[in-house]
Every structure is written in C-alpha cells, then in structure tokens.
Amino acid sequence: MQVNQEDRIAPQEKRGGASGLTIAIVVILLMVAGGIYYFLNSKDEAPQTELQTPVTLPTEIPEEPLVTDAQVPEPEVALVAEPELITPTVEPQVEATPLPALAESDSYVTEQALEVADGMKIDPILVEKDIVRHFVVFVDNLAQGELARKVSPLKAPNGSFSVSDVTDKTYLNPDSYHRYDLYADFAAGLNDQELMATYKKLSPLLNEAFEELGYNNQNFDDRMLKAIDVMLAAPIIEHPIEVTSVSVNYQFVDPELEALPNAQKLMIRMGPQNSKKVKAALRKLKLQLQK
Image (tube, rainbow, N blue to C red):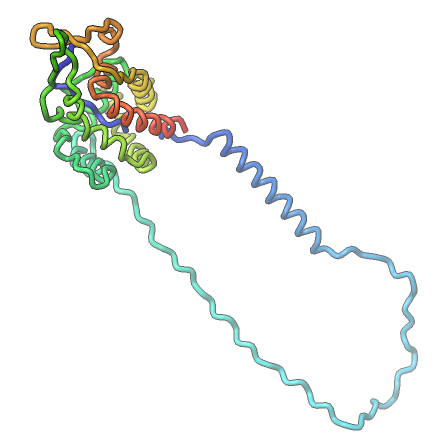
C-alpha cells in the first residue's frame, strides 16, 4: 500500500441478548422472592393448640338486670373521613420515530451523528449522500484490511501529506499527523453508551445495506467486530518512520510496515497519539458490541 493523500477514516459506530450473569441474577431474585413469600404467609397462620382445662359456663341467669349507681353514657363514635383516592399520573408514552427508508435516510442519519457528536463540529467532514451504504461498504473493506476511500463516510482530511529529508533519508513529517486530529478527537470524545444506543437504533438500516452486499447469512455486528480487530492490531510507532518515494507516492522502507494491510497503515500515518485515541475508542465499542 502506498501512502496516499486521499486517506480517510470512518468513525466506528449492540447486539442485544441477556448474558449468563443477567439470567443468574434473575433466578436468584425469583428464589429470594419465593422465600420471602413463604415466610410471610407462614406467620399469618397462628398455630392451633388444644384446651387442657374445660371452661364451665354459669347456669343461673339473674332475673333483673343489675342496677348501677350512675348512668354510663354511650361512647361517642368519632367519624373518620375516608382517605381520598389518588389517581396515579400516567405519563404519555412517546412513540419511537419510525426509521426512514434506506434510500431516504441521509438527513436522519446526519441528525443522529450530530446528536452523538454532542457539539463537536463534524458536519463539515460528513458525506452528504448514501451515508449508511458508504459506512457499511467502508467497514466491510476494513474487515478485509483494505481502505475503500471512494465510499468513506467521512471526507478526506484537510492539509497535505508531507515528508522531511534528514541526512539523505526521508521520513514522515510529524506535522502530517495533525491532519487526523479532528477524527481522533471525535472518536475519543464519544460517549460509548450513547453511541451504542444510536448504533442499535440504526441497526435495521445497517443490516439492510449489508444484505445488499450479498451477506444474507451474516450479521453486520460481526463484520464490525472483525474491522475493529484489524484496526487494533496496527502497531503504534513512536520513532521516526522512514519512507521512500515511488513515482508520485511514498512507501515505508521497513518491509514489515510496508507489508501491513492498508487499513493498519492508515493508523500508522495518523501518528502515535491519534492512533492511541482511536484504539481506546475502538476497545470501548468492542466491549459494547460483545455484550
């Protein structure tokens, strides 16, 4: 793979299902609830015992009622007002907004992306057409170690690729790394839970676009995980990286670096600091997808 000035990077965007731990907790709660129910009911029933000594009732009944020295007034009965019935307030349920058709989803997806960005100015780098399809194809290529620049969901970074000549050798210019600062900061600033909520919301559109590629028996989540693993496997190079010019492009002099998949070379060209930010975001996303 040659170093190209049109490099682009896409932001990585749950598969649901109860884990074994969740099921175990539910079972334990049911057992505890059953035990409490049995304990409370057993106390409600008082134990019955047999009378040891028979009780003798008096046989003589007085002919006249007993006279008392004073008339005892009847006790007054206090009227207790019945408590007012309080009708619980039921908040109206907000119906989820139905997803648009895949071909008409660009404005909706842009709105969701900006919401997740939470104030970060990413709208200038978003493509304007077929965002979902571009994203799915880009991720599918990443999972194979390739970069499909023509279908990147983000526009190319500003600034030009540059090199530095030092003692008859050519190195990547560290200033070139800053071209990817906005992308790396965007990935690092994402809230992984909000990102997964949005990702789950858009999953029907993502899977529809994925099926268009001919993957009828595969899940897009699995493809995402594969792409994430490819990017995480990229080495982080802290020392200067020597390159050599080939025609109008550049190649890594180190044969091991030059043999890396194109997607991993992109991580190297982002620079060590940006690469660390992106990898940290990808690890969080991977944990969310595996839940």
